[in-house]
Length: 103
Image (cartoon, rainbow, N blue to C red; front, side, top):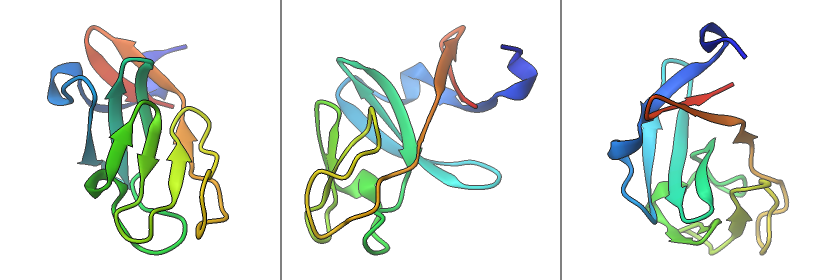
């Protein structure tokens, strides 16, 4: 995969282990989570209502929405708990020279 087909999100040092941050990109905002299972990138907004998931709780690869408590698996995007019923968009992640990229 050519680096020219990827979008740089941030540096790995920007996201401490077992934490997540919202990052503003040119065309969208994303959530970046650095877990013991790896680095995951997803859309930052809950699919139920407009709530920033980076303001919620991270437990392993699961993120819990701060507004109504829906949980999502950042590895797959699958919604795990109501009231959300639409999966979260997740992105393919590449780490190159300690920089996080998505396709």
